Image 1: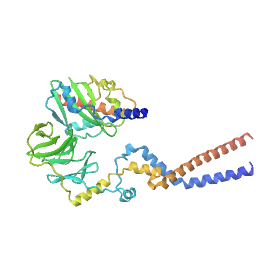
Image 2: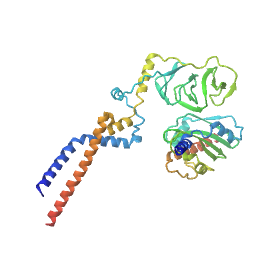
Image 3: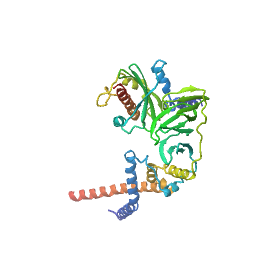
Length: 249
Length: 167
């Protein structure tokens, strides 16, 4: 072997060792996040949310909106972002805006433009009922009234059937401001339902969590990994050839 | 330019953009030739909950389901998640056999092929076995596995509910 080849091999070997050590932590991070991402469904990573204020602040996630709330009996039914809350408890996810809510001792009805959600007093879903273009909802003497394109309908059998009526209920369900403390708690809860673990792990895996430089770092690490793989194979091949030559002689 | 307009129109005519194929009310009305009976309700009591969870392979997200019944015919409107969105399915059962099944509302971005009759016709005359399996095998559709599962589950559930109200 020439002097140049020996020096080059030594340099490669040194580079292989140093680079291997330098990116070992990143490789462990990539492997762990990669394994986690491969099992997103089993680990329910897309249904579990980050609650750490530090991470949420890092992402710039704030919840500035105020909830839409309706007072029902002694409780509050509120909507913040896509989540419906009974007092503090998240009970449903919906993209439709809450337009009213009424409650009897036996059930609660949350009204949305195209759906009525029939709930138990504890907030469990009894039935989701499709009904187009709902504008208002009211409760009067255990009768549920809804207004739909200037027509009023009434139901007396827990929303199973509807009859047209000309009777106007005394009062339609109206929004009420949620007590300040509860509103703050809901805002905090809502903020804690935005960033899921899958997103966070994906961002750590790609380096995006650390900003633009993080992505470059992962790119460089990937290139160095390729270098390690090639040099590793090269050393193994060279060693094998040497051993074969020795055996033949 | 015409090619561009053609491509745009193709995109908007794609089934991906369509959601409601028929309203549940129209489906029920059609099933009873325009004069549907009053709806009735079946409560998913704690005794039924476990079986319903077995059929759906998850906890039922509802406690009550409505149906329409006249003579030996029952009609069910059931909803089940395909991948992430709800698929609304209308099922007509005549003499304890499925007469027809129809996708009424489809919000998923993939798997809409299940709305076609080449798939839904497989359910015709199917019954439910005592072990809660269907009496005939349902062939899947490549790329629509989760929607196929959702429809199969709603078919089983409707047949099971039908059994319960006829007991």
